[in-house]
Image (cartoon, rainbow, N blue to C red; front, side, top):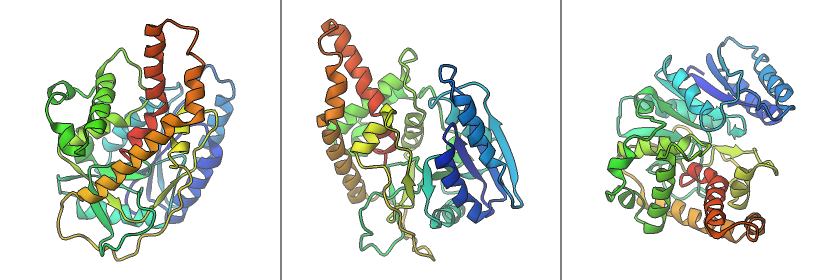
Length: 335
């Protein structure tokens, strides 16, 4: 494969091994590896990080392997985007995978062809591997254009990534415009996203995620994403101890089966957002959100703080807990 590929890893050798095996099949000529460092309060991290990095040494094909390994833990809020910054200082387009996102074999060719086709088209800023339809619809095209962006296996260009701003500096000017209402056509989601962006923009509020800023970057340029009608990525990163993954588990975003896209790709003869398909995604998100907020696990977490704190502090913690648990929704309003 001629297109550069970036792999983001941390401390999970088993899922990383599965993703690496799929990468090895397409033998990319250039592989960027972005690794976070061990957490100081987790003694087992050092060994797990080392075991994960050792997998990269299995590259046995002609390949330039470039490593950006952090010796300190930067976390989910910093490590991915600083690594992607590093990638796009060296190449003009790239396919990006995380250590728990296993691609269908057709994912790589899908991204590679579309990165080339829309290389100079400023309207298109993102290519998703994640498909949201349970079965392929009757559309004669292979993909559609969307405001719903998934970072579970994706690709983009340096020309688009240049708009990424961790501080989301444009948000204060956009906040009180009908910008989000125009994107979603749904007041409930618009208000929810406003609150997320408010907190993301607030330097005193620690949200350990990076991709909310990518949403702002794309949407602020009226950029479109490409989504396949087939699902080309399955996420295998469920961890019972990880709070973020409870949202994904309840929303049924883990271990979703893949199905290959057919080639040659059937390209739509227009670059127009598919509002119907986006509404399907929004409805799916709302249904998942409702199920999540009614879940026994979520109520249990809130119940733990219900009787021991003053109302003001308790409500503040509830708000923070809800945001923390639903950080994955930024990968699925998103997915």
